[in-house]
Image 1 (cartoon, rainbow, N blue to C red):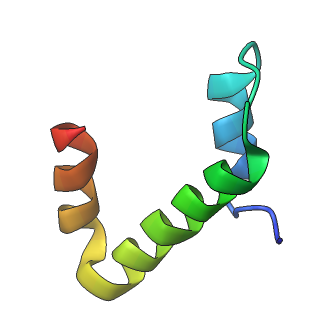
Image 2 (image 1 turned 45 degrees about the vertical axis):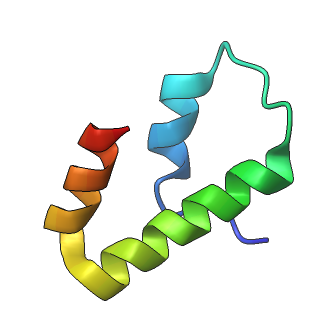
Image 3 (image 1 turned 90 degrees about the horizontal axis):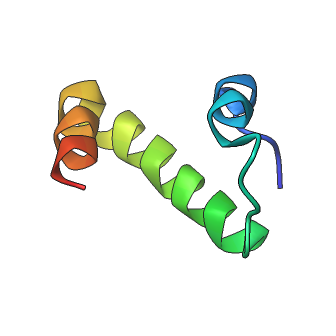
Length: 51
């Protein structure tokens, strides 16, 4: 697994939180990155706001 290019941003937001499932988190990040590549940032923003 390669760290996300935004790892430094993510770590700043989650410093005080324990990741109960590192592999699952990485899978979510990879899926979100793929969404951005396939459908662009507007779609990614919509999905984030929907969550």
